[in-house]
Length: 195
Image 1 (cartoon, rainbow, N blue to C red):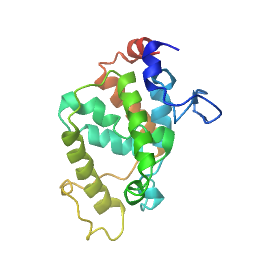
Image 2: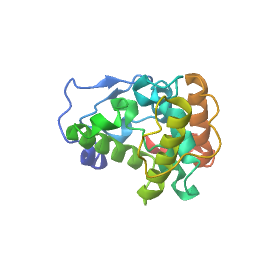
Image 3: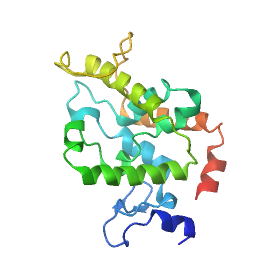
């Protein structure tokens, strides 16, 4: 294990792993940047439904992430695209439950740190991402959920109505295309350098 990888190892690796779509063993309690693949993130997020599956139509975390990445300052767009990437390895826990399980939040932060490290993301403007995330939450709630008129959110929805959500395979492709555009189309070079 490299010295750099040792930074991210909090616990010894046992049998507490998941097998990702690409066949990588990923240890959620000991996330290592070299175990992270953008293809796994795109695939998993495209197959995870927002709102615990309670939206009128299937709406993926991948599509949400692409939309959030388009609402932030360009320098923050890659971080915004990956702001929920830890959910590729943990699943999407609804907000009211996240607050009840602090251990989940710690694990989520550790995985998110490994993801940002993997893709060389530093200097993140968290407020910019949180604002965009809340705008999309308000927009998605209005367009995809029943009875959201009483949600108390710090941001209002976008004026335009969201288009109908995309199917997982299209959301996955959107995510990968957005990632490629943000890294200057040099994805294969970046990926090789990050392995």
